[in-house]
Image 1 (cartoon, rainbow, N blue to C red):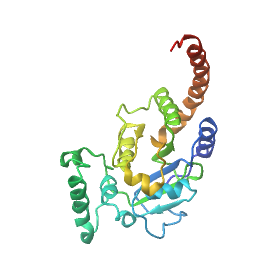
Image 2 (image 1 turned 120 degrees about the vertical axis):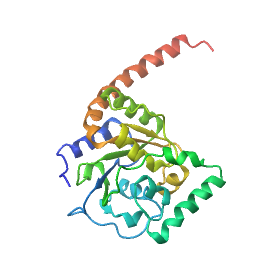
Image 3 (image 1 turned 30 degrees about the horizontal axis):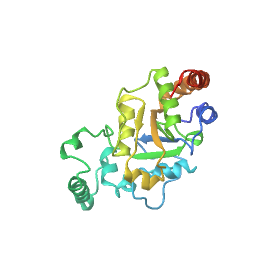
Image 4 (image 1 turned 30 degrees about the vertical axis):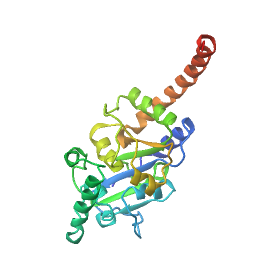
Length: 240
């Protein structure tokens, strides 16, 4: 596991100054070995995305595959094989979703997955990350998502993908594969993480974050100027 780049904390501060975020951005890294000097998660959570909530609240820890067995869908997107006694849960969960007409069977093959199963997954607030993050999750309101998306576009790291929906956790492997991802979330994620009705996610690769932060400064300044311009135009040109 790599040490945190010296600018990781600085980047988090720059982004927090530029845009109003309801909670800490969450840094996630998928590791091939158990990390040293990081607390192992103790306890249980109903889903992999539940760990986003804990990291957004300030905790730094790692999980192992067994910590993800409670959510068959999340285990699938993270390429984690369930234990033999839990394998039936995947089919049971999918059966329920099919019967509710929530997911079509042919959609399963299109859901992004990690290329390989991680040995450990580390979660942390971006500013406290003890590792180089593979992906960073921002929970934000639409106006902030707009700015982050414009910054990603200016930085040349947009994916060109449409906004993703359920399952929310597929946004992580999708970002690793393609770049910046906008996710509208899903009902399970909103319950497990406390994501507000007026919030969504932007997900970036860790390696792109410095360029996005640089672009964000420019984008925010441009939007301030354009806001003033649009206000004048509306005042003088709107006639109804």
